[in-house]
Image 1: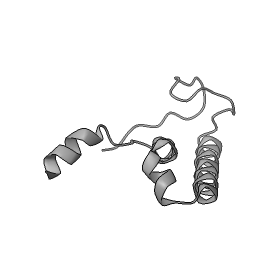
Image 2 (image 1 turned 120 degrees about the horizontal axis):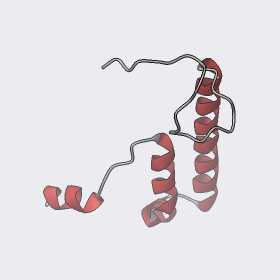
Image 3 (image 1 turned 60 degrees about the vertical axis):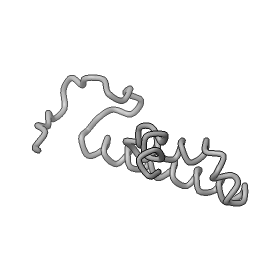
Image 4 (image 1 turned 180 degrees about the vertical axis):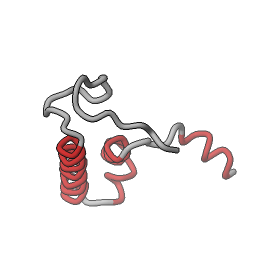
Length: 82
């Protein structure tokens, strides 16, 4: 039974924004929580996402309005450490 639930769930959200979108789109969220809560929670989490990206962009000196995921010219280059 449990394996069937996991298989039917699909891919898990990889970012906060994907998780918020999934929460907002899930009919169960609207069944369990009042509409005002869903609206407020989604708005709060999207603001959190925007604030996070603004802070990271400022820290890395990335100009505002740059499309996420595009290569940058100039500014510091960061190596990924895993």
